Length: 463
Image (cartoon, rainbow, N blue to C red; front, side, top):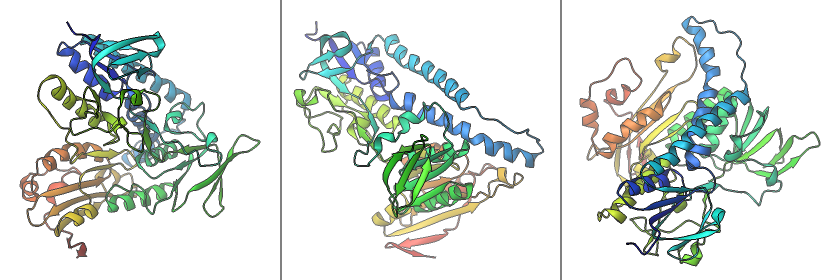
């Protein structure tokens, strides 16, 4: 009989923590998992899932406009924010229940409580005012939107957390940040009829993406009516007597808005967990430091997901959780593979990308072939929408290996998921060329671009 109450105790009921708990319990381990807020974590409760629902809602105005070119007469539409919020909340509650039931159905126990470490094997369940012990402990507490305490008036601002629960839809909003969260919410609010301004300190939005996609999306967003202020930061936020906000930005310009949203990054949830008492080392940014197997410096304490600040994506947390189970309970040490991760930005139009950008590839390879196509997708030919689609393949000229694929346009995220397979497998441009096209589709461009648009040798473009 074990000397501990649990073989595994998981702190955090998000995607990574729940997956580790459920799979471990299914192996016959005695498992407990504590979540202080709501099971499902950032992704399900206040991240990917509600955001995607908001994206769908914000796309309908363009769908209604485009319908006319296809013979449809659509009467004037009316949007009700409260209906969207209520329906979103109902779906999130359903998913939350499934997450908890998944653990319970596998034989694990769930606790609605904050859990803190007293030492390397002892955990206090705050809501139940008692302690339990565990052989192995997994930290999966995720992250949260970064605060901006240096900004005067930051207390008047919201983050993505609050954006999902606004009592009413603002008439005007300013969003600070240039990453995918800021860009997605700028498109969401604009699509719902909100006057939207994006404020970003960098020279171009989406700093970690391919430059061609960044520039094309920027241009398209501005054509739609989104105001983008690059090389700009907010300097002060004040609330007026009428309740509206004034945001003073670089250069002294002042924006009058109803909401100011901060989307300037995320930080790990490690405060007041008792990690210091257990001897767990943290990075200067507060992330849990782990080795290649997600183990901390304390050999029975592990961490997965955003709390480690490796790759902050839900599928990565789930993958890390599965590798943890293999390592901790199956005697099969497995390292998470963080290389060549497909991802999407659910902007309008959306971005799908996998592998190296042109700039990153040029730093690693002496000779590149770049295949690039820009065209109006068929769905826009009758609607008359002036919006281009961009597709790009980055290829190592020496080996012919496809290093990166980048798409801007309808369904780009779906294409990126499928492209992740051949690029992860290391297939070559010749393999792409041998693949028969599906016609008529936008994706056929990926297998019909036979001639390089240009080359990049030693970092220099050659047309």
